[in-house]
Image (tube, rainbow, N blue to C red; front, side, top):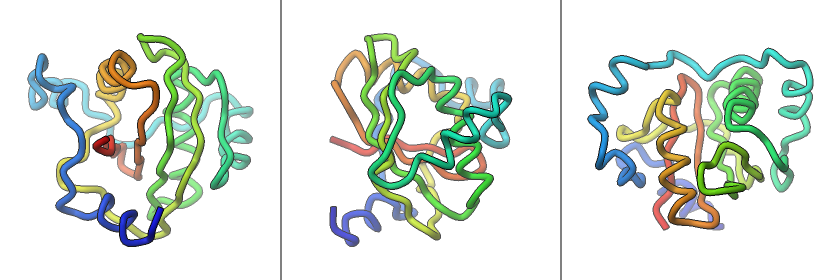
Amino acid sequence: MSIEQALMDNDLFYEPEDAYWEQTDKLAFETAHLEGEWPTPTNPFIRRMAILTTTGRGQHNLALADFKQLVGALTEIDSRAVYRFIVVPLGRNARTLSIRLIETVPVALPPLRADNACSLHIAMEWLAKRYTHFELSCAAEANYWVHRQ
């Protein structure tokens, strides 16, 4: 991936995939469930997994809740970075995943249309029914966005 492509996909005005909101009122859902930050790891092994999750490396058979905590640990390490993953859902419900960190952008802002971590399960389930894999970026303050395919 070129640096220009990475910057474009992390641009403030980038339009991420959002078709998973078609059946749900985004404003009402996020108002009721908004998360201020990614959850911090309750399991010390997840914190260790985050340290080992470097560019080109990943985790296999990771529960969605554990993935959220792993992102929480990464954003604790560097809250200014954006972490871009390739995600392979292990089943159509996306309750378990294989992930690989494909890029860390050291200083970047999420797009204006980024979503809140409270809706990650909605996006993952919708994407798992349509794609074998997809790219997802995560940033501090519980922001994530799905890259268009």
